[in-house]
Image 1 (tube, rainbow, N blue to C red):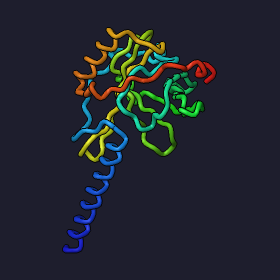
Image 2 (image 1 turned 60 degrees about the vertical axis):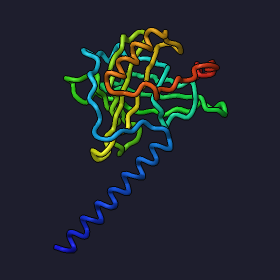
Image 3 (image 1 turned 45 degrees about the vertical axis):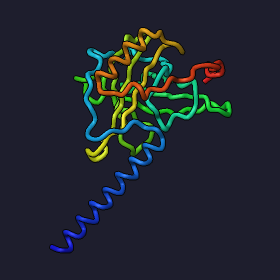
Image 4 (image 1 turned 120 degrees about the horizontal axis):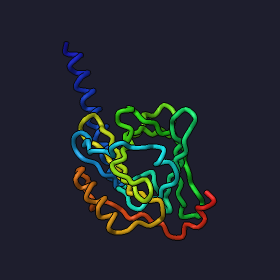
Length: 201
């Protein structure tokens, strides 16, 4: 009995240390982390993945430690099994084009605007929620992951079919993010200048 209690105490201490390490790492990378579980914002109704296919350019985002360059863009291509190939590309400061490919799939057919994206085998899918899109000019995407129910880290992207988006549309999308509980003051404007080389990517 005493030994069991001691082991439980050790597990709790290890859990607390791990939580602190995760929070510290997130803070160091400027990630947007919060206490408690992820919010559940409303997503695009009657989302049509076929209309969403193609290339989207990043206009603004919450800090993302896995994005290090500029000219960020994502290209979605349908696969024969009904899933979607995802290719994220950026231009690094040394002039090298960096890209990564993954697969996106609808998790529940009754909620087609909520997808799971996987870039590495054996790693759980990352949530990808399309909050709003007109398919032709803009898209608003949100992602959030819980950590033991103690805190969550979220990401958000304002995307466009071109490398620029009007201020009116951006302002409307800011309002949608704020209504979802996202701190829009943490959004970073993406650099989409000097991206001519990306046409070859």
